[in-house]
Image (cartoon, rainbow, N blue to C red):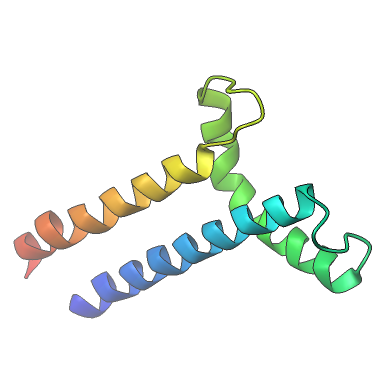
Length: 96
């Protein structure tokens, strides 16, 4: 059972880093720091978008419009933090 919890924790941790990378990439893209016509950069951007958008889109629909600020990644990071804490402090002691 420990292996299952560790695998779920690892997946949530990996998704946290993917969200952070996606946010940084979007800032770099928005401020023209990276070359958007480069095929490698485009592939990375497409991958990050495809991985994060299914989770971020429903939260963006719920959140009020804050102008040009998108705080949906922060909301998802808080949810992931809650899930990881809940899993280790509540679920795992009940199962173990």
